[in-house]
Length: 203
Image (tube, rainbow, N blue to C red):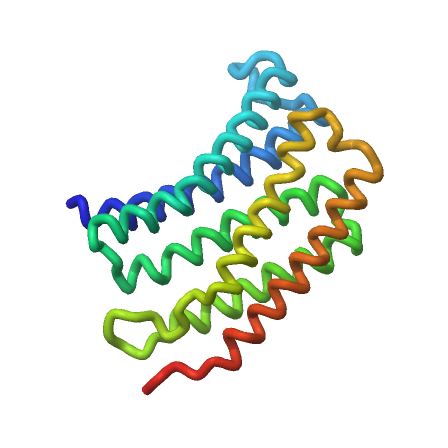
């Protein structure tokens, strides 16, 4: 049972990524529409509560990215399933929140383009990695540069949440600076993606 714990945490991270991104969008929608179910009471309170959940979900999911890997090594529970699920969970966490940010900002081209590049790159690499060569290892193990890319992407994705807590999320130069960071993240994502596609799995 203990050996299954890392994969269970990874699956929970996937659930947090989806539910947290949904909560973020719903929180924004309620904050501008005020059309919430009657049983929830005050719309602003409901919106803030969902927003708090979206932030907490991201933080817990990001921490679990380290935790499941640590547990897998500690328990000698590395598995092929875990090696596939872990990067999928990371990508889903980043991509889901980035897509919601894009919708909240009205899908401006300056943000939609790099986010689309990140999401499409992640979809292609995920499908490529799932085409295994058999045995215990995935066809394309996660590279050091891809791990660095994931860490940077998580920081960039977390920034709007931090800015919202600090009350600076509507400051124009903050938003513009963050969009530039998303473009740089997209460039790094594409570069690491090309590196993956150039690698040939052993037969």
